[in-house]
Length: 117
Image (cartoon, rainbow, N blue to C red; front, top):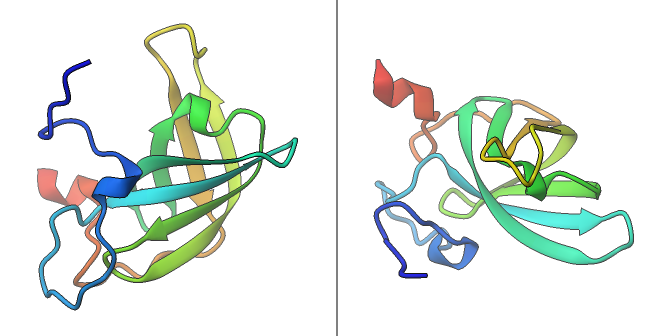
């Protein structure tokens, strides 16, 4: 599969906080996934408001815990609820993650919806 950097963001593409005042992916987060069987995984998602992250449904199915990291801002928040909508084998592979506490939207992180206003 040819990689298109305009549309595909992998966890390793998100830089750690380097003190910049502007960031390339302000709403994008890394997901540290722990499956029910203890296996670890990674994923990405995007913040749509101060407590909600959208991701792929396969990133939330069968998970024991999910840690949501905003590396550019140096912030990490545990998920307290997550659910998938649709089936993995359909094009509707969507997952929703609720953060355990509101993310204080600051200069580094802007919810995705705000760019549409």
